[in-house]
Image (tube, rainbow over all chains, first blue to last red; front, side, top):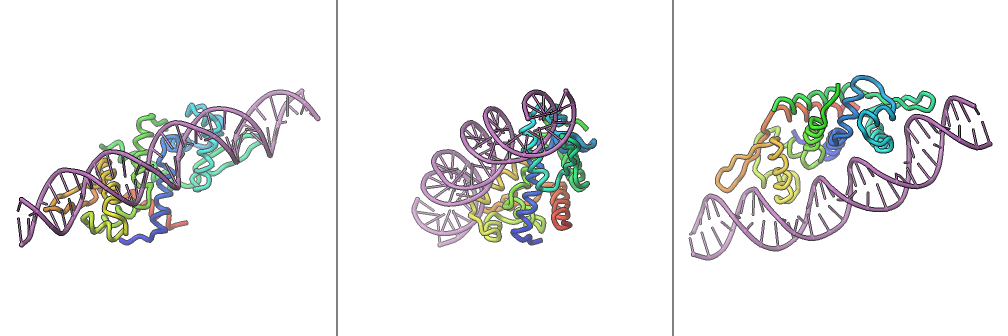
Length: 96
Length: 96
DNA sequence: GTAATATATGAACACTTGCTCAACTATTCA
DNA sequence: TGAATAGTTGAGCAAGTGTTCATATATTAC
């Protein structure tokens, strides 16, 4: 199975989105439904700024989608592929 | 689904192993069977040193396993979980 | 209009990562 | 023994990443 360099890069980018504990925890919280930035920040004990920066990356990779309501922005997972990847990873981590 | 900080870190580490194009290409080559460091280096057009450094990381994460035969060291995937993760990622990348 | 709230953004900085290069170990062959 | 081959390892460094802090934007309340 030879892989083009482009696809190798795309795959690496995909997995990079889950290669940081803060992002993993954001994904894990959004599995239960949408949350605003402030709620995420509180649950994660991170600053809103740090959360916002991470959400930006996740948004650009189409891992999450934003919905604006008044001055709040609610985020949710964009795609169930992400959930599958997450669960498969979790399974791997737990069965060792 | 609340995730402990430890598991978030472990998950992030797992996905980190696939978060680099060189490592992704190594995994993709090893899907077809074991290969020595030199053969990997040639197929990847990377130095043996660079490949060896990456293999070290993959070994530590138990993504690959080494078999020594004379002065050669053959690497293969350690676990079919990795293959599943890889294929799921590839599917995601290709269906967009 | 002003003030308060919710989020986004850019710069700066510490930390991490992946490579190169040189030196090293281990094995085979003569 | 010595030379050649296969791979590993550590130092050094450029590039990338995640956070903080200050500032900016957008919306709501007054």
